[in-house]
Length: 495
Ligand SMILES: *Cc1c(COP(=O)(O)O)cnc(C)c1O
Image 1 (cartoon, protein in one colour):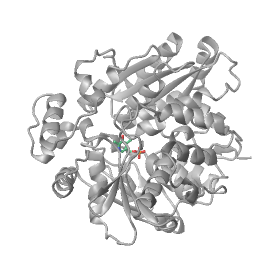
Image 2 (tube, helix red, strand yellow):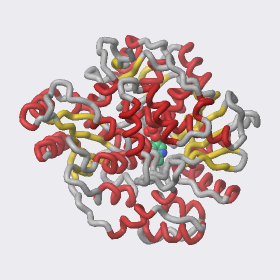
Image 3 (cartoon, rainbow, N blue to C red):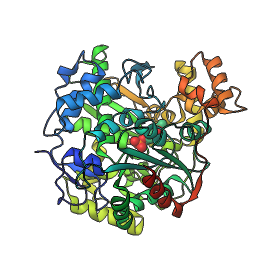
Image 4 (spheres, rainbow, N blue to C red):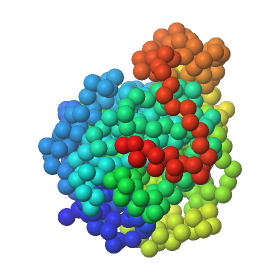
């Protein structure tokens, strides 16, 4: 029986449904299963299959307490006509490499892959002890893209509310409007005075606040849960597109079944790339996973030295969704790379909380480096990469994808191992920076920039983004960090 427990202790024994409903473990750890890797996915069987069929198979291996019929329903609802491409995550050639476009969902960033399906998973989990009328309040801090993708997924989902906090002035105009114009009777959006990590830490404190939890359970029958990438239900849908990418390479004749490939992943919270590691553990022939960071290169430093040190300056960059000092999902990778040593993980996370840093044993670092490569790009390099990619390939990339593009170009290329760059956002989410990088007119609103970008490159802005210009703003509240719990409590009572 596959059960889930915290990365920091082995006492819990939860089904995947319970783990999804609860979000984060009571001790602050992340839910993991020791059964990961015991079931292998037979890649040969996936060739010729649709994204949806691949998803049912891969999710079945990761969430065994969901029936196949349940998974099928979730998948059909999540990966339907709201996607702008029938392949869901199409693979395209990019010079000698490949790019996997993850941004064809309703909010134009890769987080849609997970957040279109998480609410459907959530709806199939039963209340643990809160009674049948228990409602779920999703609380999320966002550096830009998660918030909108979560809002789009959870808006008007039965039995569920969602509250999103974003750092004031630190997301793009498009990103902010995407959130503040969100419709739905169960949604709350609020700006926070602080950066993303401040907001994220405050959300973690809200989850750990037992008094608040007791009040919400008693007065409002509401249980708080997370839609951040620490939720198992957020992580596992992302494993699917690694399989899909591989199958697309086989179908195009670029590789034979069993050949190894590499993925280069623009990384912040380590969720997207961790899903690639899960795919590898499920048997996908992945040679290396390359972590691409922006100027907040804490992961690069960690993977190079073995010391994770969050005590460093925080840079607000043109790739805001990767501006992160604490990569939460790294904890799961460390768990598996330490041979599932929850005592070690607990100590490391304790060190992180207490001293702001931790150091892993040398042999563990060596093992990690066997799988994970790394690199990073500063903002000039990001701009230069956007330009270089357009000039070489006539292909427009966003500033997050550009970090990956830069890192990929720095790495020596082994012609026998195809490389896939994960493209995490539409360039139209960041039209100003893209135009500046390409030497196009970049004045006026983001919408004026979108129009210029479309005209100059012969591409088309996603309709949902272009339409934001005339959408009504519903939320304009700003709170201090210590006001966030109050916002959650009021929203829970209004559910
Ligand atoms: C969230 C995000 C990332 C980083 O993904 P993680 O799972 O946090 O590593 C990269 N690019 C974009 C556009 C994102 O929205």
